[in-house]
Amino acid sequence: MKTATPASIGKVWLVGAGPGDADLLTLKAARLVGEADVVVYDNLVGGDVLKLARPDCQLIYAGKKAANHTLPQPEINDLLIDLARLGKTVVRLKGGDPFIFGRGGEEMAALRAAGIEVGVVPGVTAAAGCAAAAGFPLTHRHHAQSAVFVTGHRQHGGEIIDWPALSRTGQTLVFYMGIARAPEIATELIAHGVPGDMPAAVIRHGTLPDQQILITTLAALTPDLATSGIRPPALIIVGRTVALSPLWEG
Image 1 (cartoon, helix red, strand yellow):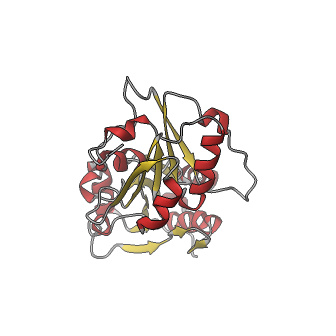
Image 2 (cartoon, helix red, strand yellow; image 1 turned 45 degrees about the vertical axis):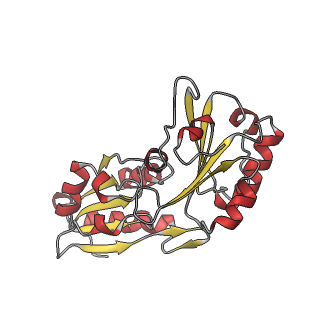
Image 3 (spheres, helix red, strand yellow; image 1 turned 120 degrees about the horizontal axis):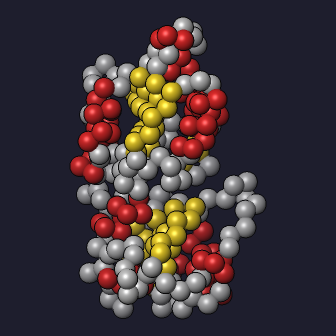
């Protein structure tokens, strides 16, 4: 790509698009999407959010699904750098919050190393949005004094999950991108002392009209999920607060 002079180098905004419902976008995020020359957006960004872009805005899809990346992360980093060097105002639009399992930290580091100015706009993370859509809180003074966010994807298949730490009482566990590992999650948590009757939820497209919500128990998670028709991407939430959902029948 042609590069611009330093005086005309643009800026990249890492913007959280929220959990899907465009009404949950922050005012600043909506304004920046409407002002951008280029929007580079992810798979989980709601279509109504993209409608906020101006007619002449360039929309570039850079979505990722399990084992299917439209653009590998290094290429996304290079794309953002090249666009900024062309003097463009770029919005890197990410589902949820850019800094919660969104690789926003990696992109920020690459942009800064290239001398590109970076701004960050937080968004409603999927954990908060999906739990609210299902009618239960992530924390509650009588049930969960902490919430733990865990990625369901393995980095090169080699990371070690601290199952004993995740099995402590008084917390809500939120597994992002964890559908493929649901049997492992249930088996390991129960093996490390979490009761089988612990409430659990699986939520797909939370906050959107086509959202799917499964409320079950940890012991029944795998068989219930298999018959639910819920496919990735979806969140798995485990903890006593799930029982506060009006859908809980335990």
